[in-house]
Image 1 (cartoon, protein in one colour):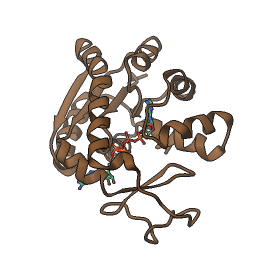
Image 2 (cartoon, protein in one colour):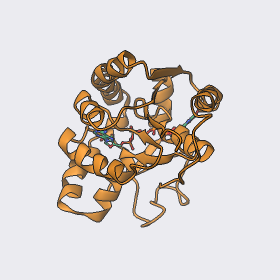
Image 3 (cartoon, helix red, strand yellow):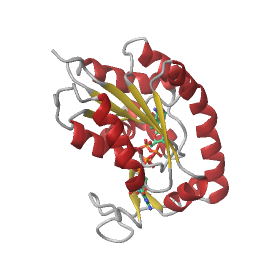
Length: 224
Ligand code: G5P
């Protein structure tokens, strides 16, 4: 059996992790696991964990590490015979260490996007507070302006996406991500990509994955 391929993608809010992950999953047949997706799922289920998670996600704060590892690691156990791509997990050193104790990653993609670009993308962001669903008025607008596609309820814009708060959030992301990036650099699996447009970064990522995975089977379908 060919070796399984395990990868993760990191980057600040709005950096294009989700957009690039979906392209990777489609092009290379990796199972795709998005931490944001599973958090929104748990919020929508309105379980005790979901109620707790909502208090963090609503304020764009990091969900505690033990909640994240409990949410993500069991899903990976169910995929022991598959190649996969993690989007948005791990985000902290504690999460990376918990993952590391179970799996050795083959590749970590880190997206470096200029602050001004992130600011433009995120200032156009609206959310449905009850579910955590996110819209971007420029690139993935809701079907009806100002309304959630599923429930029809009003969308809101976070104070967190205003410039001063955004700057603080991005600085916090950088501080928290630095030891994670250093860890993967020391393991020789980190590849960083810089730019202002996903479509210009994508060919480089595509080419890297093609090289790294040319012996990998397309063993999985997309989960999300
Ligand atoms: P998420 O869901 O992981 P974020 O905030 O990290 O959310 P987000 O906003 O989903 O990340 P992204 O996935 O990096 O951004 O980027 P994307 O969605 O592909 O693109 C962002 C927007 O820009 C989209 O509208 C897209 O269409 C547009 N775009 C993409 N490329 C381009 C381009 O080239 N040009 C232009 N003009 N636009 C483009 O996490 C949500 C929350 O969950 C918690 C945190 O609270 C987080 O805030 N969380 C965790 N907490 C602790 N630990 C973890 N591991 C956690 N994971 C999630």
